[in-house]
Each structure stands twice: as C-alpha cells, then as structure tokens.
Image (tube, rainbow, N blue to C red):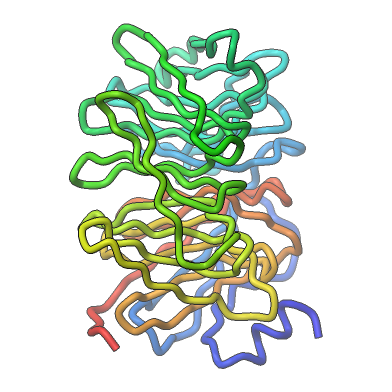
Length: 344
C-alpha cells in the first residue's frame, strides 16, 4: 500500500484534489464535504518556472504572490488572477530560501547562496544585498520575520540568528547557544520573537534587547522542531520533523500539547496558523497539505496530485493558504471556508 492509498483507507476525510491531464496555467479541484470545521475547499495549482525549485512564498501589498526559486536564483512574482510570472534575478550565485513583506513594502529574502539578506523592491525590481559579517560565513540562511518595531529577524541553519534594521541596514548576528539548527521563526502578538531549531530539537525565545536566546525544550526528545508559527493568543505551533508530531506551546502557562499526524511515518515540515487559529501543515511522507482543527483535534488531508511535491514554508491570507511545491515546480493555493467548532 502506497502513501496515498493509506490515506484513502484511513478514517480521515480526504480532499478530492486530483485531476487528469497536464498543468497549463491555474488548475482547479473542488474538495468533498468534510466532517470538520473546514468546508468548500478548492485547490489550485499554478506553474512556477521550470527548474526553479519553487519553495517559500510571501505576499506583497498589491496582492501578488512571490516565491523563492532556490535552484534558479530568482524571486518570482506570480499574479494569482492570470498565472503570469515575473522573475527577478538575485545574483549569479543566488539560492533564496525565505521571503516576507517588510514595513517598507519591499520583499525581504534570506539569500543563502550569497550569505546575505536581500531586499527586493517590487516596483523597480531593484535588489539590495546586506551581507552577513565575515565571521559568519556560510550561515545557510533560512527564514525571516519582522517584529512589531519593524526589525527583521532571521535564522541560519548552520548555527546563527540575527537582525537587520531596514532603515539603516545595520546587521547584527549571534551564534545560537547550541550550535547548528535555527530554522523557522515567528513573532507573537505580544511582540516576542521565537525560532525553532531542527538540529537542536528545541525552540528559543530571543531577547530583543540584547540578542540572547533562551531555549525551551519540547517534551518529546529529538523531535526535530522545524518550523514555528504563533496563533492570535501568542501560543506557538511547532512542526516536529523527526517525531511526526505537531505541538503547541503556551509560553504564559509553560505547557505543551502534542498530536501525531496520521499515517505510518509522517514527516511534518511546514506549519502555518490561519486567521481562525486553525493549523496547516505539510507532510512529506503523505505528499499532502494537512489541516488541523485544535478544537476538534481532527486532521483533514489535501494530497497533491503529483508525487513528492515537497511543500515547504507556507503562508496565507484570509480564506487562503499558499505553498511552493519545490518537487514539482508549482505553487499550490487552497481556498477555504471555516465553521465554528467547540473544543472536544
């Protein structure tokens, strides 16, 4: 039994995100009704540039979608209405990883190929590189986020985290307390900055005043905390790559909750929390985007119609979640409605 057959035989409700034929512009698929808080979900696939290895996505202030082409060294704008692509080259050795909209309406990129933070002006395509200090070469830059003061914080998987003032472009970098691992990063409504350490199997809170990181270890050992996202209350959701779990940490109560994703060997990669505090993940073993309702504690899976899609960091806006299928050179969008649920 393959991964998709297992999902179909499970007790989950599975979206009918399948179609026959060749992708040519946006491709749509309606979902079946589900006994969950999500309904009327529609999956759309957009072609990315061939060979791009399309991965992390972000949105600009005009509603356009931007994705990192890690293999072709571009940040590419996607018009969701037409499917039109507009690539911006980040440099000869570029290998961008993460992208996020800044308070200056520019797109900010962790540009690992040049060991720099890149700023891209959507209006002019102008690219500005802010290199890391020489002592932090080959940081393997990963993900970035803006705090409430407009400061850009970022991680590097080879054992660093740092910040950039977008006004002065001053950059500061610190070695992570337990070496390699800093990966996903988030900011809470309270303004706190947290990152997840994949190799370190922990999350960490960065003191924005002095740059020191305080480690918090999940209850499951060697769980491989990969990505982290805050909900509207400041609770942190963590995708655990090695344990196959998604976990929730409440910093105020210092408590954890954990749930294992369905399937024999789940590999949760990305995590995103939508406007209703519902949780979205990607599961590399199931080739799927997975929706989790914390109130009902139920999962709903949206398998890709291609094998090994490898959706990495996700992003979303009201009624939509987006991700880059790095294994298929496509961008996936799931549009949805949610109904109120009560805790189980």
